Image (tube, rainbow, N blue to C red; front, side, top):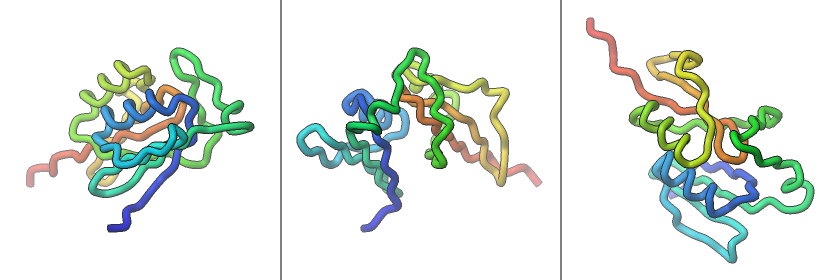
Length: 132
């Protein structure tokens, strides 16, 4: 089965792999020589690739993570419970935007978090349908 896919270039491959597995339920399915890690769900594939050269030098690690908002791509993950996911994000070294900044659109609650290397990730929780 061919899945939709995304790639993130990272400097801390092992910890970033744990972050995406624990926060978003992706399962590690392949790894080669420590240069990349392929994570999958039923819906899609996420490749984490160890950055090198200029790419690696552009990633500045800090605590809390400095938001890398200068990229034209944002990943969005469906989660069952945004608040529970926020707790996992914090525990694994990410940064969580305040819940007051969440927004609703087309029956989905949206909220942003930042992974440990500064990539902005959107959490997407399906809202219950209103009673009629």
